[in-house]
Image (cartoon, rainbow over all chains, first blue to last red; front, side, top):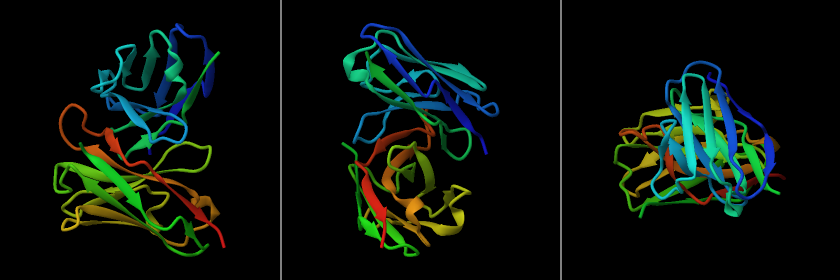
Length: 106
Length: 122
């Protein structure tokens, strides 16, 4: 079983800030890493696939990087509508999700 | 556009069987995708339950495997989840999702249902 660990579990930032979320895998998963955004009462929404590819329709302020065991999701300029919980998911083997990072706007 | 819609009872008794169906529109269940179930206990994170391919091939989360069955009905373009011997710990929002099986986004869940809340209680 591949374990996915996200940090921090929560953060608070101001509009316009650069925000980075980290996801670590317990073993190498190459670039088989996806990121999702979930707002309260809604289903998750795919943001980034294959570690760094932007899903169609997702704002370009979102970006992903990394390979192997260490990955990051970056929001270059935080907007009010980015308040949400973000999850990473490995697709190297049977799917597994990280514990989530709640992003709040100051 | 592709849409998924979960349906089924919102309340299940302890030790009973949870049964949900996900109806797919805008795509064929025989397309090259895995059809999946993911759940989320109140206030907690996402847990993958399992998936099925139109051929009938399936994969399950090892922690739930002994209690889970996922099936597909190609004639109705839907797939179903059965979870047996439920307890309060199975109370959650249950989502169905499409997991891509080819292309650069292979392995990603690109389409999700809206989710359905299932409570286990007597």
